Image (cartoon, rainbow, N blue to C red):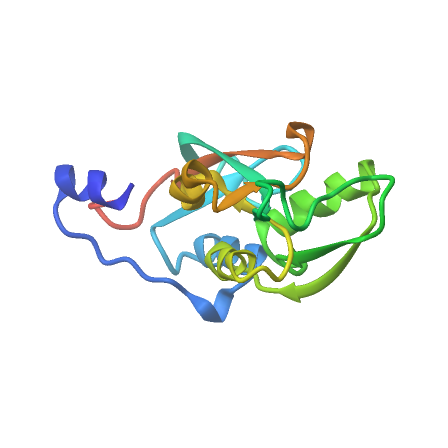
Length: 180
């Protein structure tokens, strides 16, 4: 997304703010005027605390988060979510990220046995642990396209467990800087 924007507007300064490493913290940065844009996931089950009269957004696309595991020798998931089985080893987003909230809602609606063995709010961190065979996790499809294609990672639950989200770019309705 950044590359396509820079092709039209020129070089941008972007920054990952680990001091605001929660979904609410990232939203607060935009709310407080500390940044011009917020690129984020959105879904009706995860409230986004931005006043729609103060902020506008553009939908850039969508993303699917797939529950995945490494494949065993038989090509089946080593760690699989099976509602009537023993608890699966789950790699979790914790409680503060967008996907953590989507998963909390999913498990509230569809309880399934699982035990959390690792937490990391970053999808790339969870992907590394899935690849190490430590458990299953919901990973955005765009991060695991090649691993799914090669069979290194396989779905760890039926498709009804997949999560979808819009990808949105927010900014103030009245930007404070001309470039925004």
